[in-house]
Image 1: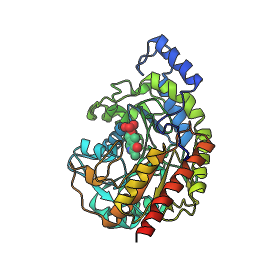
Image 2: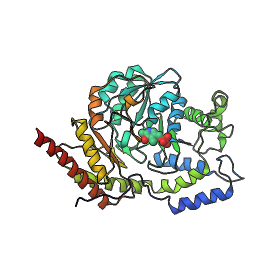
Image 3: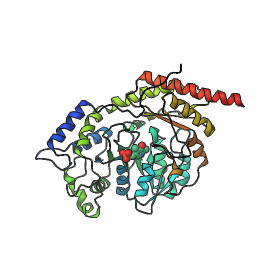
Image 4: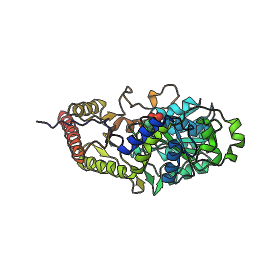
Length: 401
Ligand SMILES: *Cc1c(COP(=O)(O)O)cnc(C)c1O
């Protein structure tokens, strides 16, 4: 009998009890709005911002309604205007080009390597075409950030980091999100901290953060923020910046603060799961694992591998056979966007040029979540199932030739 995996790939852990208790306190107070405080009270949202800034070592932090909102706010606060172009990854998820489009700007896609990071040669070739790069650390893969910052610095390109998949990660010891002008994070359920929806942005630039705070809908209550530039920074900015309401509330912040305290412990658990799957898939014929550079302090809440240069038909067969055994794999090479998965040629509201080298990689990317509700034994079983099904399709193909 073939083993069948019974776990749920979308099942996250419960909110820690401490977070549930803090959420109940906020609900009992009735003061869910971040500016609804009584004398001497510091809002949960303001405390979360201080604690997150301390965690990543940024001067400023702002909590907002979603990761996508963090991206648009960071771009607006950095000066992106309608009609501008913004460089971004061809391998990413829909909210990234969507954030660019929502400002009336146009994405220019940069290719992906077999290491699943932005192709720095392609970036060098395209860097003069924009003043901005919205860099997505897609699925937690971090490129050579020193080289990326050199390329962008030399070209005068402002970098905004999408750290939806790299909260808690680092490159050579520097936290992800601390290289760019802004670092943007998501606290949506499937990311590294879970408040249902939510986002955070960090920066060291006082004026840009003052604009971000006004944009997020602070009214004239910006002095209630703590991880924020001093009130005099807002002198002109408070008149010049539109309110594009997207605040985080105290309920979400209360749920997140205990999760932030245990983030690094959680990151260790994700990586332990990743290493079990990686070991289980090593030397599977036809399957390429992704090399992780030594400088990359990654957090692997998901796992990717490549079936490079396989026929679409064979890849689909692997995905179907694994699904029958309870292993849910997403394929970025599918002709039609499905579920959360789409690719640059699915986003037809924006122009794109075909990128053959990138298409080759995208067509071979297979992706699975590794929620912390899976045990290490679960991960070993997942790897056995994938290995068996990839090998079966590979051998069948060899026999047919
Ligand atoms: C989830 C995600 C976002 C957007 O975050 P939301 O909080 O869902 O708006 C942005 N970029 C990437 C790569 C994501 O996975």
